[in-house]
Picture 1: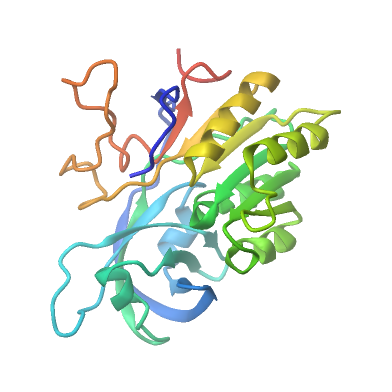
Picture 2 (picture 1 turned 30 degrees about the horizontal axis):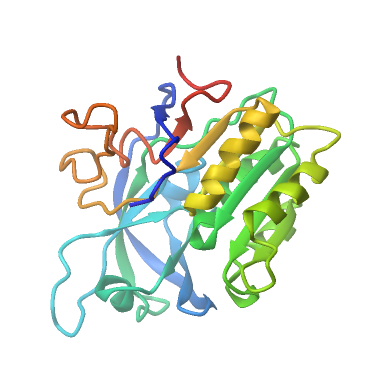
Length: 284
């Protein structure tokens, strides 16, 4: 589960209509390495592609591993929605399930359930969008960049990674006309202080209308600082292990630091996108 800064108290975004999830077989139409141990999977899933809202996710079945049935599906952010009925997901190979997934080939079929969860809320009168992501966390908000591009809202996207060969999202930003700021640990540009200075200079003349973030404790803390400084809304996409993705099992409930005896909101149903309490536009 995403580890949030202690000061980050999350609020559930206002209720809005969500598409009805479907459970459909999806044919693999593309599958290729994107970076070391990171793969981009393209699936023919017309209902998800047509209805998924920015920030929603799918539960993806996993094929057998060495003859052993893997029972639970894996949650995957919808990275891109294509007009032809395809969706793209990006995943990190880091366990038995994703190792098995990495071996699927075009023509194979996987079961996809979605779209699921509560996505981002892009204000109709928002100024520029600032999206800050680390690693595959970038994939949680690229659909929001799609929506911003379609609405004529300029986007600046921070693509953070350990090394340059692990930066994800450059080609997506270029396709969508978004400004990409790639930063890495190796050259020091991903350091919070350096990135803070860079973004302060970038938005010196006009603050963004919305800040979104996913994928890093320190970048979430920076996003909170920036949102307070600019007095703009901040939304965070939370990553969590899930068994069902539908709100039945309650395995992805967030903690309530102020009230440990009560169950917190469910990442799969109340999220995965939340408002950060105290930021402008957050629920009262």
